[in-house]
Structure formats: structure tokens, C-alpha cells
Amino acid sequence: MYVEGKVIAINISEKKGVPKKTIPEGLFRIDHGLEGDAHAGNWHRQVSLLGIESINKMKALGIEGLCTGKFAENITTEGLELWKLPVGTRLQIGETVQEVTQIGKECHTKCAIFHQVGNCVMPTEGIFTKVLKEGLVRPGDKIEILK
Image (cartoon, rainbow, N blue to C red; front, side):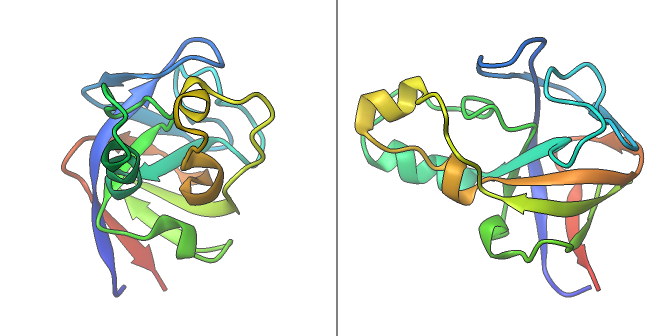
């Protein structure tokens, strides 16, 4: 293990296409993702992660009202350049182990943030994982890159 970050927030939504609300802790299940989240399921994009550093880039462009969950990320992180992690990287996040399955995504329907400033960070700096070891994740938990 050599680099670490931390969890800033856990975010959830009951339906797709809406910002997520922050919750005190999340239960992440194997082959599913975050219990109760609309994007969870047995596929390669079970959990989405975005760094607070990416959110702050958008704030610096003058976008008002940005906070955790606005980009529909399940886990808001701090201290890691997520988009630089190779696919296949394993992360210890709280009690869980998750594997990076995708970097970025195609943005099919441009979100409100894109329409406001002509750009969004989730398609380029967000990452997706699948859950290999289930458990709870809470704000303040360490994120460690496993060798």
C-alpha cells in the first residue's frame, strides 16, 4: 500500500438522473454496490467515485451551490487523483474492497451543470468500481490503494 485518501461523503439516490443526498454511512454489497442506490446492480459500474478536488474545479468556474452528491457520485473522496488509477486497481475503502472498472463515462444527457458552464468533471474525472468485499463506508474512512 502506498497512496491513501479519505472518504468525504456517502451519497445515494432512489432514482437515476437526480443529484444524490448525503447519508451518514453506506452498506456496500458484493455484486451490487451501495444498498438502496438507483445505480446499484450486478454490473461493472456498481459504485461511482469523484474527488472533492474535481468538485472544487467546477466551483472555481463560478458555479454556485455545488456540494457532495451533485455529480451523482456515491463516494466523494479527497487526496487521490482517481482518474489516474488504472482499471483493475483495488481500493480498501472503509470495510470494503473495491476494484476500479471504468475511468470516466460518456455523458448521454447533458446535466444541469454542463448546461450552466459547458463542462462537467464526472465524465473525465469520475471513476467506477465493483464491490469485492462488502461492508460499511463512512465519512472519514481511509481509502488505500492495495498492491
